[in-house]
Length: 318
Length: 318
Image: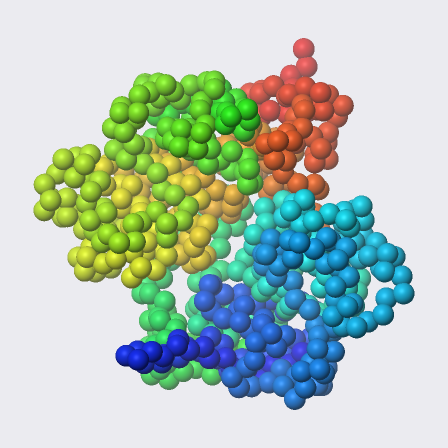
C-alpha cells in the first residue's frame, strides 16, 4: 500500500512570550515525527493530553506551520505551495473537530454551513439542493433539518453536520481529532459506525486522533503511540501487543468492559516531565520500570523492529 | 444492613420532574456504580443524598433517603451540615475547580478535621500529611504548603480524596472522579479508591458513564436512564446477562477486545431531555425490543435473582 500522506521529521516548537524580566521558554510540542499514512486506511494516534497528538493533526493539514520537517500529500510537498495553491489543496484534506458545539457557526443554518465550502473553494455547484440532500443523507441526517440552526440539534446531530461539511468537497483524507470525545457513549458508537461506513464506501484515508484505546483498537489499522511530542511506537495492526513500556502502561491502564478481566494496576512512579524542560534521554525514563542509566542519558531513536513495527526504546519489553 | 437506603426518590425542579422513583442501597465495604449517559439523573441523585438540591432550586418530592437509620429527607440544614463532610463526603468531577486556588492545599485538608473532628492545628496537619502519604502523594510535607496550581490534575484529585477522607466518613459519593483525567492517572485513582473501600470498610457510590470503570471497580450497579432506574444488579450479572435492553445496548456501545469490523451499532436516536420524556417506558423509542405496551405504561420493577429490572419484557405474567 502506498502512502497518501508522508511526514518527514515534522517538528513544531511553541514559545511563551518573552517579557522584560522573563526569558523566552520554548517547548517542542511535536518532535521529529516521521510517518507514512497508507492510502485507504485508518491510522490512529494515541497518547495522553499534552503528548502533541492534536498539534500533529493540525500540522498535517498545515493549519499551523511546522518549525521544521515536511508533509507530503500525494507526492506534493505542502510546504512548497503558495497560499493560493494550498487553499486549492485543502479540498482534498479536511478535518472533523472534537467539539461539534464550537466547530459549527451558531448563526448559520445547516444548509449554509454545508454549502459554505463551495463558496470558499469557488466551486460551481449546479444543483445545490440535490447535493445538500445527498450530503445529509450520507451522514444520516434528515434533510428536513437543512433550515435548522445548530442550537436546535443534539450533540450527535451536530457532529454529523461537522462530518458532512468535511465531506462536501469529496476529500480523500480526513483528520479526525477526537470526534466522539464530547458525546455520550450511545452516540459515540453511532458516529464511529458512520465514519467506518463512509471510509469503506468512499475509500477515505483517516488520521484518527484519540485517547480511547478500545475505539482505536476497533477502528484503526496502524496505531501510533505518542509521548511528550515523540512517537514511541508504531504498531502495524491496532490489535498487536505493544512492546514499549509506555505503550504497555497505556494498555494496562485501560479497563475492559468485562468484570472477569479485572486487572491489578501497576502504578507508574514519578511525574510527567515538564515539556519546557525535557530530560536529555528518553522522555519516559523517569517513570519507566525498565529504565537503565543509558535511558537517562541517550535518547532512543525510532527504529524498525519488524515489518511495519517501529519502536523507540533501549529495552523493549516482552 | 444497608448503610444508605434510597427508596422511591423523586426530585422536582420547578415544574420539571427530572428524577422519578429511584431506589437503591449502598453497603459498607462495597462500591456501588451509578451509571448512565448525560441527563440520566446521576448527579441529581448525588445532590439529593447530599441535601444540596436547594442550591439549584430543586427539592425531594417523594420517597425517602435513609442513612444509617436516619431519614435525610426534610432534615434541617443545620443537621445536614453536621453530616456533610463528616459522615458523607463528596468527590466531585473536576479537581481543578473543587480546590480553592488561593489557599494552600494543606490548609484545605486541615480545615475538614479542624471543623468536624475539632482537632488542634498541629494534630490536623499531622493527620493531613498522614492521609496524603496513604494516598501515595510523594513528598507530602512539602506539598502540604503548595498551592493547587503547582500540582498536576491527578495529584489534585488525590488532594480532593484526602479532603473527603479527612473526617473519616462512612459514605463517599464520587461524581465522575476520573472523567477529567488521563487514562494512566484514571487507573491510579480508581485503584486507590478500590483499596480505600477495602481498607476502611467504606461505602462508595461511584457515579460514572464509563462501563470499563464499572467493570473494573464496582460490586453492584444501578443503571439510570432518563431519570429512572432501568436495572440494578451485581456487576457480574449486569455484564454477563443484562436484563434491560438499554443495559445491553450500553455495553454494546463499547467495542470489545476482539469485536469484528463493522459490527459496532450504537443506539439509534438520542437521550431525551427532561422536557420531552416519552410516555410509558422512557427508552421505548430507541429500543429494538419495544412492544405496544411500552409506549403506554411505565414498566413495573420486577425482582431478578440478584437484582431488579424495570422492563415489560421481564414482567411477571399473572
